[in-house]
Length: 82
Picture: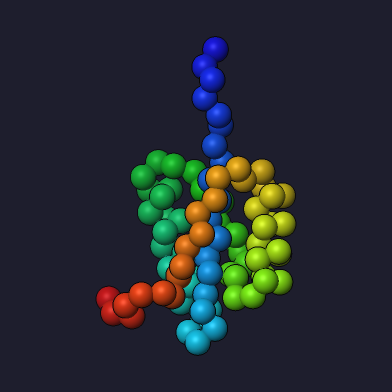
């Protein structure tokens, strides 16, 4: 028997309120697709975090899915070019 935990990875996108939330949404969906294309499983939270209230909602969402490893994706931080 192996002593290797079963990891269920989750992804939560974070958005600065000075940019459209749709930018973080779109980019997190692209990350999700790339991870799945690489043959790994990931659960992407539908809630994009812009406030503390959103964070609570997103954490409740991923906990309900049994996520035990988390990626926080800063979806609209950085250069805004292609």
